[in-house]
Amino acid sequence: MEVTAEHSGGQEVLSERKIFGIIGASSVGTMIEWYDFYIFGSLATVIALHFYPSGNSTAALLATLATFGAGFAARPFGALAFGRIGDLIGRKYAFLFTLLIMGGATFLIGLLPDYNKIGIAAPLILVTIRIIQGLALGGEYGGAAVYVAEHVRDNRRGYYTSFIQTTATLGLFISLIVILVFSENMSDAHWKAWGWRIPFLLSSVLVVVSLLIRLRLKESPLYAQLKTEGKTSKAPIADSLGSKAKWQTILLVLWGATAGQAVIWYTPQFYASTWLQNKSIANVSFVDTNWIIAIALALGTPFFIVFGRLSDRIGRKPVIMAGCFLGAVLTIPMFAIMRHFTPVMGHYNPVVLVLCEWVLILLVTMVYGPIAAFLVESFPSRVRYTSVSLPYHIGNGYFGGFLPLIATALFTSAAALNADKTPKHPNLVSKAPYMGLLFPVIIAAVTFIVGTLLLRETKNNSMNLQETNQRGYSPAIFWSLIGLSVAALVAADHWLTPTLNTSTLNVQWFFRILALIVVLCGVLFAVLKRRHDAEEPSQVALTGD
View 1 (cartoon, rainbow, N blue to C red):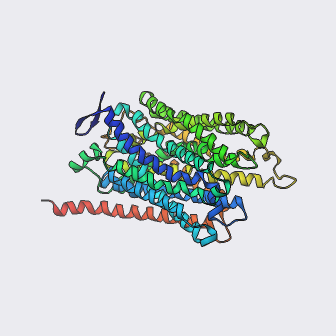
View 2 (cartoon, rainbow, N blue to C red):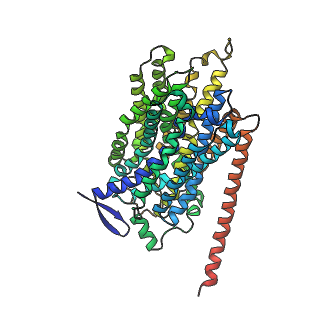
View 3 (spheres, one colour):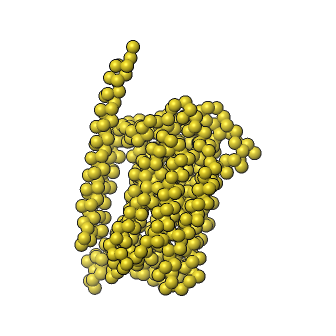
């Protein structure tokens, strides 16, 4: 069978086998990077015992989840750094770099000495490694999605790119299977002492295999054509972010798609793990929790392709918005059903837990299956790598990556209010296990509203897109999105960061200073760009006839 991939230089005929070879080579590396990144989250409860002071298991878990989130916080910066490389030098080279960096960082975690051996250096080094991993992942996903999308024809882009979408879940699935295989074939004492390091060390073998596969790839034909014609961007970051209209598009894609997609993705696949293992909420064992999630993932993964293909027929927007709406409506009821069938409630039934997890995974496939096609179709070809990566990794890095931390902190705060014999808020006693779920429910609802009202359909867009087809600059829309972003930051500053303060570090002020640095960098960028734009006409005039 032959398919036609349409590009700016005409038509290139690719066999179905060739396309799936490209998808396979891109997907294997991406899946391994997700494995590397997510194995940390899967082992959060074990890692907390090794790299943070003992004595308060809840504080250690929160610190571990914050470290997990640090990797996500770095992802947007990786998106800018490697997105720039991908738009300047080429898609292929950018995600070769990211693979090597991610693999090396994961291997180092497996070798890192414990807190009781090197003290405070252990968590500091761990955070540094997680940030390096985040930078690498920030450049990986966008490159793989763009690379595949630029090889396939327009009317099947949702279907083909949905295979890339399976890689995140497959990476998590493989990490869970590896953990289960090793943890169940050694004593609990050996597993907690040193066995947990094996999945991290195993990454080096997987990375070498993937690197050999990726080295055989050629550059994207569309990018090669742009480079031949001299149409690639010379300043991808400036071309992606250099005006209010471009910032509006980034924020619109963030709030109208990726923020909701992120919370729906991370709730059943990460927060559910710590939620099920919490002794006061569910008290499901470590092994059972991982089997429950692994089975649900295996049953749900094919639906990424189902919904990707459906988006080729009815559009990306209807599928993604339906997933966000159902996520906002069904998340808390599904967790309530799950809790009823846990050991804490005396009705333990892992089959029901798998079914509930599977339903939540189906919502993941609805929002995530078409999202790669939607993103690559929303931005022009010359800055596609940078522009796709930024809103995706802000959404998944902050809204998704910090979800386990935020949800756990909300639950802990609600439970603390009722710790006394006479609860201060008796009505919260039965609701405390679900307080953490308010965060993903609210964000999913906001995305549904913003996306439904403001996003435009993209499925008919060509890969030769010169400008975005999303809404042109509107002061009302732009400042509304800015206001929404500021409100999210203020809420995080008021309710989240204080829960992370320690006797040695005021996390709240650390994030305030970090936010100030980011704002100042943004202002400096705007001033330099304005000066550059002002100087350009004068240089043209001086060199003219």
